[in-house]
Picture (cartoon, rainbow, N blue to C red):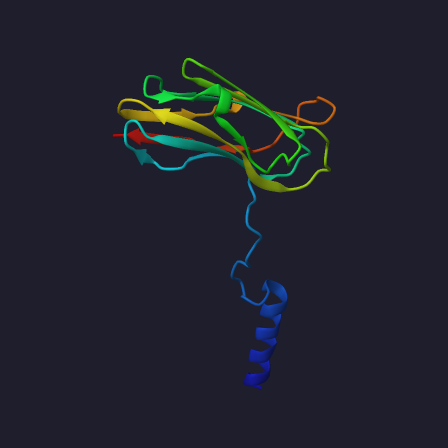
Length: 172
């Protein structure tokens, strides 16, 4: 009789709480949309070249174009507008980009030429090449208000809960 009651309790536990008998069952990973910036190297020598990669991860909206404003500490970093930006694969092979550099600010706009449908997408937007002169620390910062996504009709696209990364370069 005791064995029968134990089996009933075990079966009830399985039916009520799942195989873990009350333990939390594994859930799908939280796919938070992210705009990240990363460096080819976190520390380089003065006079060396480096690059800053801009990437999007888990974007679940039909983004046709984007613009971003990246602030950085001036005096150490030189970005040559004419050859500084290399397009990544996120917007596809048929994309156009515009890069403008002003005193401590990089403005970047990228747009597709032809729209592709909505998908959850991750990948590199592109890479900005730079040259260092002098030594010190350079902080690269993107504020939420400085990021804009647009659909194929020119309407703003909201990307809820967009996480934005920052990064720091040390020049020795």
